Image (cartoon, rainbow, N blue to C red; front, side):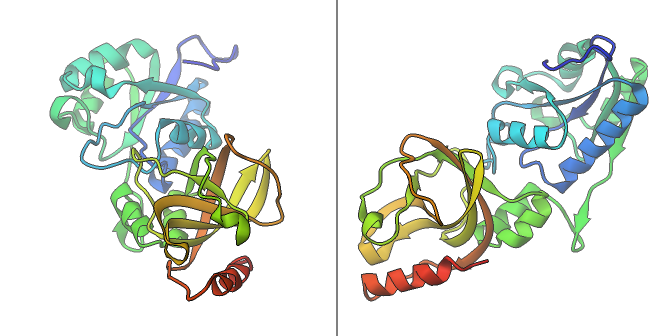
Amino acid sequence: MTNTKDKYTIQSIALGLGFFDCVHIGHRKVFDILKYKSKEYNVLPTVVTFRDNPKLSSLPIYNYFDRERLIKECGIDNIYALEFEKIKDMTAIDFLNDCISKMGIKILVCGNDFRFGNGAKGDIHLLQEFATLHNIDSVIVDTVNADNQRVSTTHIRELLNKGNVVQANLLLGSPYFINGIVVHGKGIGKTIAPTINMIPDIKKHSIGQGVYGTHTLVDDKWYRSVTNVGFQPTVDCKVSYIETHIINYSGNLYGQQCLIKFERKLRDIIKFDSIEDLKSQIEIDKNWT
């Protein structure tokens, strides 16, 4: 663990448990209670999560480094990352005894759907029994609902598939984002509107194809931007890029890391009759806000 401060008793922590796969508003409720309880107990708020993906049946919305960024933005700097591949065969009891009991925990906080151990056989009842046995307090956080539906990564993934970024962002608690290294495209954009190109991360769930109003972070400054996710039929480009025109910016960003926040979908991708028609539409797109 890192960032332990002198005012805390060594290894005295309030521990939040979960995968926190997209740090949505349900996860943020866990963090809020964790921070509140850590002040009450005068201990360090700490989150346990996984560095790799335990939900092999689906791609995560964010990778570990994305989630680390978001968790820290929520005010929790102390993060303990477990390797799922190394502990996936542990029983629920072994997970608690070998991974959790040695952390100097004063209080445990998790959602009511938290599962752990081989076959996800461990649940909140076993966790509470363990906490009582070890003189650890525990808080089980109720499910968060929005529009009469449980907030879940599955639902957010469905919204992103449809390009409904506005609703997805409300459930995420902050704008959906991607980041990556700027790569060379085919150079066609230079003749239409200068763009930066990223290759979609195949290990993460991708947002649905379309044109989006975005903000792009360059050198610690946010710029309004327009982002095309998918193919470019007007110029007969069949390679799927994440292509972004950064408004009122000029410069060479090849090889640099950029972060793009998605605000709302502007339109579907269509094939225009001419390059001039495409240019005219881009000028309209640039006025998205």
